[in-house]
Image (cartoon, rainbow, N blue to C red; front, side, top):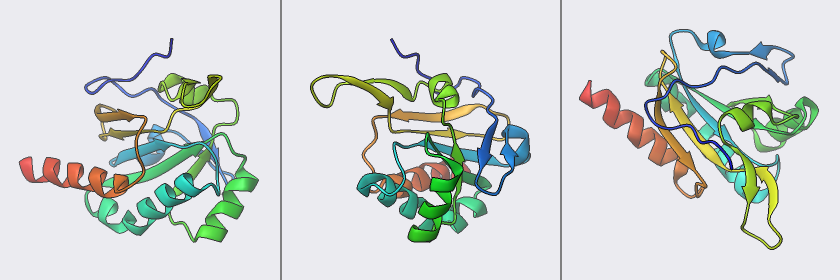
Amino acid sequence: MTIKILKGERAPNFSLLACDGKEYTFESFTGKGIVLFFYNKDNTPNCSKEAEDFSQHLHEFHNLGYEVVGVSPDSCETHKKFISKRDLSILLLSDENYSVASAYGSYGEKKLFAPASSGIIRSTFVIDQNRDVLLAEYHINVENHAQDILTFLTNISKAN
């Protein structure tokens, strides 16, 4: 059974490489919150749409104090091609051994097709600068997802 991260919990730390050769952890984003999303594969229709939508709204996320970070099992080389082909502005990290996806409950059994298989469970986490999980969503639909997350953050910002 996959363990899931819940709202209010402390987000697990991570240490992953980006295609710029840098290793990123929570400390890389000191003073910012993170919208951390897990996706299956670069250059596939839904994953491309999700990454493009987050990129399109990146300046709005930055204005609210959040960085957007995508994580998949693809290599840094594949990420470079994906970023170039789709003109992405978000940061993509490589989790080739599924260690971070597993820690977030974003890797496990998927029963969408018979037979069931293991893989990335499309999920998104909104994490504040103190590493507290403000939102944890699993099995998300990419349609309007980036806008929904932006609306969530805007509402939180107005409430504070």
